[in-house]
Image 1: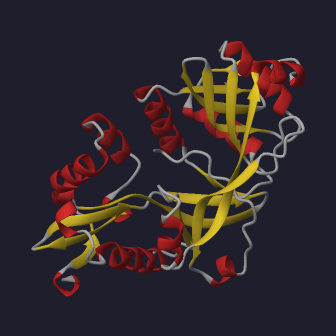
Image 2: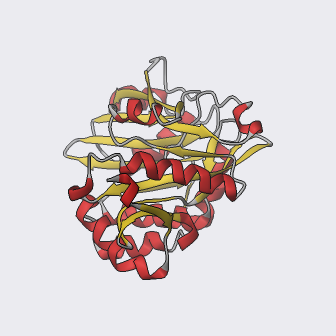
Length: 288
């Protein structure tokens, strides 16, 4: 029963239980969990426990949302999980509300998250979140892309610092989470761990996966008007014949309008956040 549970901030003594819950839910190796824990402190982890032991948890790394000179302090609701034996009891609803209250106590202005499935948009919508982040999906053949390319952008070393600089420059006029270098370093680590490639250039970046003769670009992000240059750099990296892109809504490859789909949700907590409209925000990097 919910009333027998206690929501609280995590402590260092919870580490073993949190690792076990993460592995049982997501199946990641300990090295992945170790690396992520470098991105958070116990104050960024909320748990719900029975007899003191966590049976449900979510993580809240601090992230500033930016658009031009406008900013909102926020936390990213990530890796929310409940032990299978305790699911269906409403624990996560209780934990999400506790997380919001804790964020307000820490003067954060809002929370955002990326639903793992389309059906979860309704679930989180009933818990105070609104859809504010979108992505554009478009597909092209290699021959079509070659006709659109210009001189390729210059490839740069894939460091967390360069990732931060490139991403912020590319998204400066779009609402987005400005991830810290620590989080971006974790993202680069995940890409290597699970077979994705990260192309950083002087005008944008692309995170992509190759399978047989096709490439799935899960995050194609560049400065406005520089799409052709980033495409040129990408085509130099792969001989694939088919490409599928996910990118910010304002960006455009060729003449295809693409399909715009919801990608993330936002729960404003402060008065100023509730008065701020996040239109066609972009997340891109989801750490999962």
